[in-house]
Image (tube, rainbow, N blue to C red; front, side, top):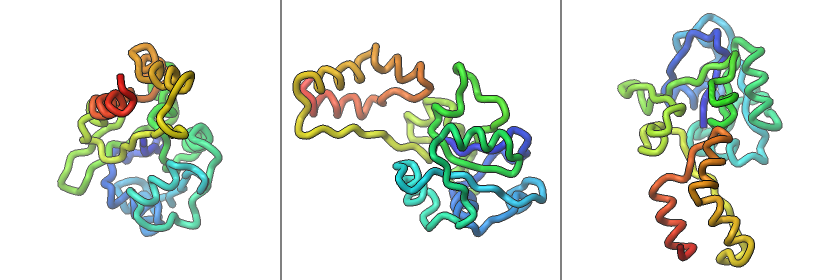
Length: 189
């Protein structure tokens, strides 16, 4: 999950604690985190989003600020941040890329585990794969029992080199080695 701001925002890095305080409403002005003296505009997902729940439970660790604008999807957040110099939001990494390059008008912040840690970018897959980037989660698919027939064929395709190539082409990261091994074991291939 990428934390994004407007490209004109001078802030390049935040800690997990700062992100929590921003999205819970404790930090309200960019000046408090090294930016300009302007109120922070918050953008997030609606409560029916898995990303909304993950970010709240694992990063904010509190209720979101009442000031957060709840958007229908990642694309809406990106477009809003492009227009709002004071904006900050969280989106899947695939939504910050356009044609394999960072979308114009936004900046992806580097995230540090704490004030003594370096900021790490989610735009480098190795940071995510090795667990160095602190805001990453796998996405799961569920089936009614162990997949069989066409469902199993589809899952096998998704996990194949060809399927994972499509994942990458769409701006997302492939299944990492640990989960590939787990999937092979659980699906018998």
